[in-house]
Amino acid sequence: MKRYLMFLPLAAVLAACAHTEDPDDGAAEPDLATPTTLAGVDNFAKVTDGVWRGGQPSAEGMRTLKSMGVKTIVNLRAISSDRTELRGTELNYVHIRTSAAFLSDDEVAKALRIATDSAHRPVFIHCEHGADRTGAVIAAYRMVVQGWDSRKARREVGRFGFHKVWQNLDFYLDRFDAEKVRTLMGRVEVEVEYVP
Image 1 (tube, rainbow, N blue to C red):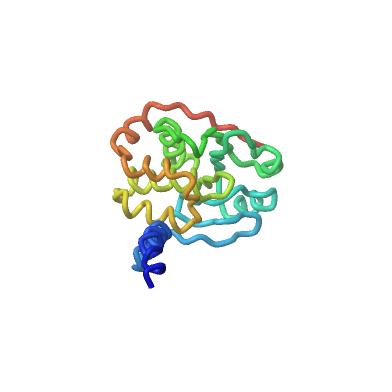
Image 2 (cartoon, one colour):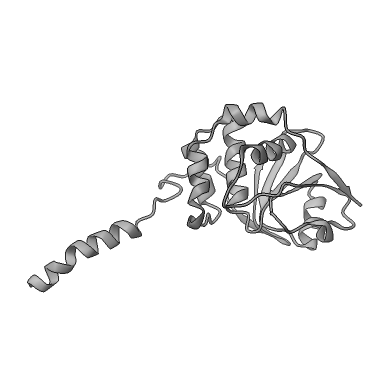
């Protein structure tokens, strides 16, 4: 019997480490976006009437987004370009090179500037999986533009397969300064490219 008691503290520690908070806190919130699959786009969701999000679109996905009325693609990937997939779509293209390891207020402000500019909406914002960088930018949109608190915005991030290895993004959102980013949105310059 004593032998089993010896492992009890270890079991308690392992159980505590294994617990993860339910991103929805057990409550249904209809205003939180829910991921779905769209032809050629994984992890797709409508955030608002003018802002959509998802993973890396294929050429088919770009055509699908165009047919749905998207005007501008915002790519948050550091290296990968969308130019090949965009050929023939006549969409606007913005490439904001970000890293999931470090997301800056300037990068977020650039994405939000495009997302709030009626000349470029509807916009589709993506990274590779549509989970981490995209999740952080959309959470920032929710806080800056829609007035959500950090906790609610982070619950939505959890619905899209947020990879826990990027805890720095969760830390960033927890300490996010919406007013600072709102001010930066008026100062940052964003290059928008038309892809015929």
